[in-house]
Amino acid sequence: MNRKETVDALRKKIDQVDGKIVELLNQRASLAQKIGQQKSLEKEQVYVPSREKEIFQRVSELNRGPLPVQSLHAVYREILSASRSLEGSIKVAYFGPEATFTHQAAREKFGSSAAFVPLASIADVFQEVSQGRADFGVVPIENSTEGVVTHTLDMLVEADVRICAEASLEIHLFLLSRSGRFEEIQRVVSHPQALAQCRRWLAGKLPGVRVNEVASTAQAAQMAAAEPNLAAVASGLAKELYGLQVVAGNIEDQANNITRFLVIGDQQPRRSGDDKTSLVFSVKDEVGVLHRMLQPFARNRINLTKIESRPLKHKPWEYLFFLDLEGHIDEPRIQRAVKKLEKDCLFIKVLGSYPCAV
Image 1 (tube, helix red, strand yellow):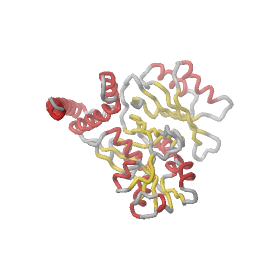
Image 2 (tube, one colour; image 1 turned 30 degrees about the vertical axis):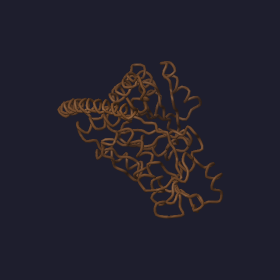
Image 3 (cartoon, rainbow, N blue to C red; image 1 turned 180 degrees about the vertical axis):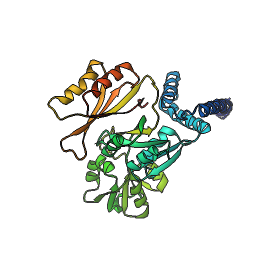
Image 4 (tube, one colour; image 1 turned 120 degrees about the vertical axis):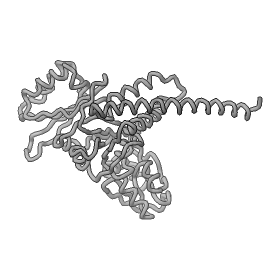
């Protein structure tokens, strides 16, 4: 048997497998429709973060290769997205415009079958969700290079929403222009955080070239599409959307450049077994007060993964403290620690308990 016949025979087997995959996907879709009907009767949410986490974990455990787990997750992200669309529509607001990294994170979290709504500010995303015009919102919370996004912290305190899920996105920055040629660049524009994440690269490769801040990486890409001598620092998605050429790729100064995003909504996800709880509190300005506030977590053997402080507006030298901790608010040990904390706080708010990012 020659090589061509061997390839043809293998392709026939692939065709047979494809037929089975299509049949099984539609069986799965039919079951999702039935679940959607039941959810509608019981007025339950279409998107269930704990169930999504469970599916991804099981897929990882079942995988025996040669497909890498990351590739299977990408496939299942779209399967879940399409299945949810059969159960009911999901409207997701995000800090836009199109092709921002927040847009990319929203697509990776909800898949392509959700309805995405770009908004001009983080505050607009919170308002859209709190007023029920969007089911969920996606906003950035922190970057591994540049730190916390303060606008998001402030809105978490003020808005009547919950954190429902989180997502982490590895950030790769591209220098994009109409021609893709270094020698034609006279100015570089991007969002302040994106510029900060590649500051050293720009200084080394484009010394003397003007660098200006704009509202988003997507706006920078739009400007680069309109001006021949202007380059944008933006995402790979922006290259596709705005028809730009790559001058240089992966220009971030730190190799492990990761941004964490939050999904906000009005639901409290149930326990998944691998959860995180976020809360914020304020206390009187006294010696040793923060140490006392953290003791209930230590006594209950609760691991704190993050602590961040923010000044209280209109109250100089008073602060809000944001905590991320391992565990779900439904767990007795978490409840004990929070109840103890409440006794000594001027203000406390549980921002949400949600599955940790896959």
